[in-house]
Each structure stands twice: as structure tokens, then as C-alpha cells.
Image 1 (cartoon, rainbow, N blue to C red):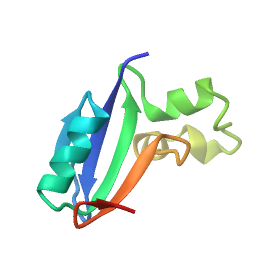
Image 2 (cartoon, one colour; image 1 turned 90 degrees about the vertical axis):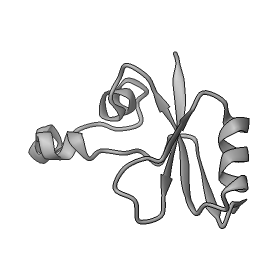
Image 3 (spheres, rainbow, N blue to C red; image 1 turned 135 degrees about the horizontal axis):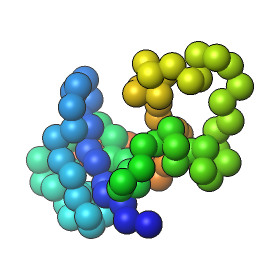
Image 4 (tube, helix red, strand yellow; image 1 turned 60 degrees about the horizontal axis):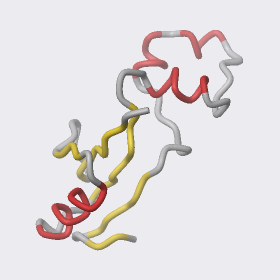
Amino acid sequence: MKEVWVFNGAMARFPSGLFFSLENAKNWIKKNKLTGVLTKYPIDIGVYDWAIEHDLFIPKEDKHQLPSFIGSFTSASMDHYHFLDGEEE
């Protein structure tokens, strides 16, 4: 499965960087002294479906089928790194 690293800066509504290489992502974050989270996302599948496919989430309530839930779904099981002023925490 293909994936991409996505950087979301603290307080940002949208990602500010997408990378195929973890090393390039970390170098960019360090160079710019950024604070935020770098997360590995699968390509061509939504996180909601990915989590279900990998037995990381089981929809149990009606609200779990709502577009608002699916559209804002994220999973702590995704590989991710936290950064503060460019340094990995």
C-alpha cells in the first residue's frame, strides 16, 4: 500500500506539507522550526475505511455511519510524530 506523510501545524485547519519520504518531512520540519504533528496516511482509501479494514475500529453506534463522523475520523493507530519548534518530542 502506498502512503504519504502529512504535516499539520499547530492550530492549522489544513496540512502544510506532504511527503513521500519521512526523512524529507523531518528535515523540512526541523529547518523551519515547526510545531505540529506528522502523520502517515494511506493513499486511495479514507482513514475510516483503512481503520475498519485493519481491525482498528468497529462501528458500533448509528452515529458511526454519519458523514460528519466519517469525514472527521482519525486514528491514533496511524504512525505519527509530534514536533515542538522543529524538534521531535
